[in-house]
Image (tube, rainbow, N blue to C red; front, side, top):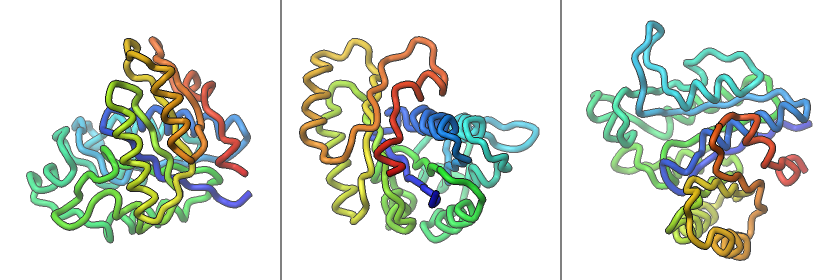
Length: 228
């Protein structure tokens, strides 16, 4: 099959992008596909003997079938858990779409069949005073998967993000409803509203899981719309 790569974004920083991306990787592996993933930039890392390591990137590395060095999976890593452009300023570094896009193109040269590139935060998170994560996605031109963190306010966040993705000229390949608030009021009504108003296919409805693991998430996801 032709290589499939998707850019994963979320309604906000705690929507569950990494967990859903890992679930998609496991689902693809179960379908017999070679998988790979990357997180071009992370902010919020622990210093290890091997350098800075971000938990999201480590999870992606563990969930994929391809054995890639950490520096390919997460080429730009900052210690403080703040917005990427702020972490870069504090470290005296410059972030740019051109540089991050180069890392992503290098990743795309690897041999795999299904891949995900996870953004940082939401769609409009700044990289510098002129560019955002959306500009990186536009540079790459991969279809987008939107992870919606199901909680109070998610309808507005989801619809604004879906609108922005399409206005930026990219295909919204699908969305995932991730129930991050088990006490959310009118959950079913919120879900039905999103299903009605988001034109892209729903790839899965993931309930609040007491014991979180990638295989458990994969059970609630479907790749049918992505692999057609």
